[in-house]
Length: 202
Ligand code: MG
Image (cartoon, rainbow, N blue to C red; front, side, top):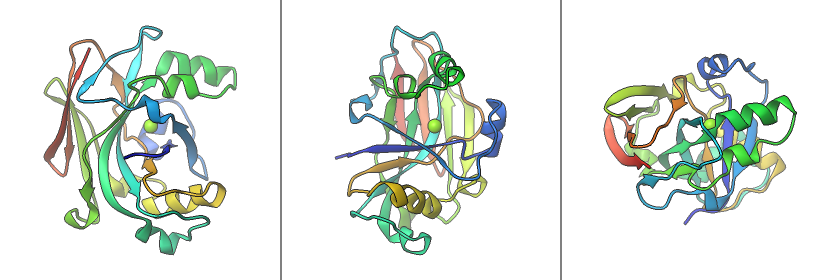
């Protein structure tokens, strides 16, 4: 079960740079509708965009309700980690950003959100590697060490404004290497070198 889907933008300096965005002093937070979740292992590309980008991210699952959680306490508010895809209609997002309008439609369309199965954090090291292969070629690779805002800071920051609820999930940002998806693409997601999900694009 998944409640609200929160996302952090620009959390890896190398990715902020590739899109020409500046690194912010506080996390950039947005959300995706629950109905944007991919059901099963097939992503159906929408017809309103010609540039759907993949963004591969670590995803935390909140395990209890909390409001104004301190960074010190934040660690006890998640037990499980997955890999997700925060799909983005980059053409529409660029248009909306230029007009200083909300990104929602470019980030919240049907099938714009994929979340793999979750793994208990105790089975992972402190510094977590993840990667994404597109048609057998590695296109994105990240490590939690490279994040500008760490998991505890993100949980604490969001909860200062919005009460977090059990089963909320948080996408923690994408490293560099984002790019376009095309029909018939094959995506593999790896959490610490272990393949955790395999998807088809239609
Ligand atoms: Mg993202």
